[in-house]
Structure formats: structure tokens, C-alpha cells
Image (cartoon, rainbow, N blue to C red; front, side, top):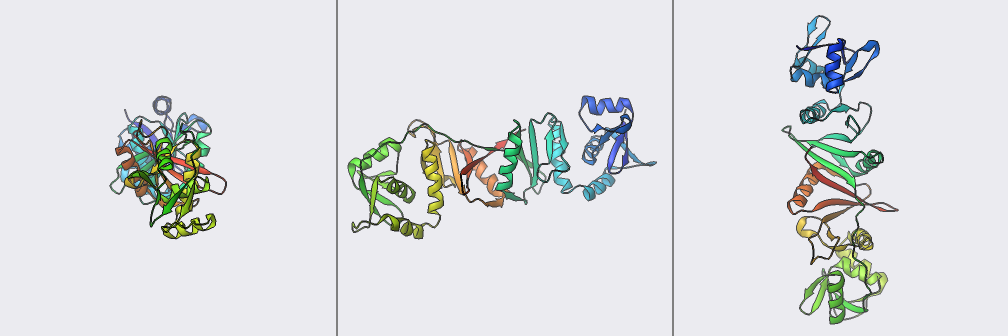
Length: 344
């Protein structure tokens, strides 16, 4: 027997106690309204109408699905995106409710176990807003899901979280030495230092009996006073000039260096992530005992992008059994925001 509801002020009112019991008590649709009635959102009514579980009237006229879609599209911002996500999650067995007044969050799960933001694939990714939402949601033990609806109506889900990334690699003391600055790397020709850097903290890559290190490693070791940096004709480059010379070759080097130093301080082995489309790959344990667990991409405090970039990064990271993190630099700290593929 079909449930009956009446459209009133953009809500669907269900009055029969038996219908209310079926919807609210058993399936968690709607919310109690005055007079002992049940009030359904337009999205809830559309879903039930689509499932042929309700008959909706306005006065004496019975409304069909097309008429209700037309009304909902005028009353609900980004209606079709929200409806597709609502329908998908409901059919997966999740009791969720529309959060009508929140400017970012779209749905919440009945017991607040998770919240959902629904986006179109063409919507902007504003990392500052995502990060703020993660913090507000997770402080009460909930998690944040992000649902991306593509142009064909397929939905991809991600979980977004703040990552307190840590490893167990302790910093070592190294003998002092020199390295020669080339066009896009530096070479440590001191065999003892080269061997120690590679064996203890996996700096660089062997270059015959010597060691080639990246510019970010060279700057890091220079600031730690482990290496002096020389020109190719073995003239010492003053510390204050090293950054300027390297920055001309790699304009983003100082931003990457800030994150590199922070990751090293957190006890990780940090290597280039170029082959995986990121700035760094990071190991929590020695690379000869495990693969890199994380791919780290450095972004600015006002970073904005498109969801296609996240889709590509997450897909690649998962294909090589890693997790992708955006390292966002602000004036006072670095936040690591992790995105992972989710199957609700």
C-alpha cells in the first residue's frame, strides 16, 4: 500500500500514523512536524516517488516525478548533484539527511558518523575550505566524505582527513664535506660522507663511488652545515648566495624545502616523487625494508584546483599502494590533507 503525502510550502507532509511509522521509525525519512505529522524534504519525496513508495498530491492533483523535479530544481541549489548523491547513498543503505543551511556540507548521516559534501566534477576544489570542514567535522569524532558527480552521473567518493604523518627514522650526525653544484643536482665527491649519507638516511643516489643529491637535499644539508656547496671549478659559494642560485634554476625550491625539512623532522625518509606525479615520496621506515607509504605534493596556503587533479592523484597513488597528501603551507605550520578512495 502506497504512502500518501501532500506538498505544502516546499515540504511534503505525511499525516497517517501508519505511514509515519513506516517512513520515520523504520527507514529514518523526514522529521517530526507540528500536529504529529512528518515533514519530508523535496529530495526525500523525490527518492520515494522514484522508488514508487509514495503518492504526492498538491490539493487534488497528484504530482508526477517530472513535476517534482521541476519544482526541486528551482528551490534547491545544485539540485541534480545533491539528488544523485542522496539516491546513491540511500540505495546503499545509508540513512542520510540534507543539511539545508550549511554552505559547504550537504548531508549528514543519522548518527553523525559521517558528513558528505556533494560536488560536480566541474566545481572548484578550495583546500582551505576543505581543511576547515575536516577540522569542524572530526572534532566530534565524525568523518568527512566527498562525493564527486561526473558529467554522466557516475559518483566517485573520497574520504578527506588531516594526517599527522610520522616516521621512525632518527636524524644522524654526519662528517662535514663538500659538494659540487651542477645544472640540476649536486655531487658529493667525499667518499666517506657520500657513503654515510646514503647508508644512514638514504640521501641521494650513488654516482659511481660518490653520491648525487637533489637541490632540495643539497640545501637541507647545507643549512645543517653538513656540506659546503662549491661551483664546478671548486669555488665555495657563500650560504646567502646558494639559495639565490638554486632558486633561479628551480623557482619553487624554497617552498618544497620547507616541507622537506618538516618531513625529516617528523622522522621520515624523503625522496623525489616525480615518477608518481608528486613532489616527494615518503617512507616511515627504511626504504630497504618497505615501499614509500605516502606521496606528498606541496601547495600554497591559498591553493585551489579542480577535482580532476585529485581524481588523477588518488587513482595513481592507489595503483602503487600509496596515499596522496597535499602539504599546505601557512605562515605558522604545515598541514597534511589526505585524500583516499572510498567505497561507501
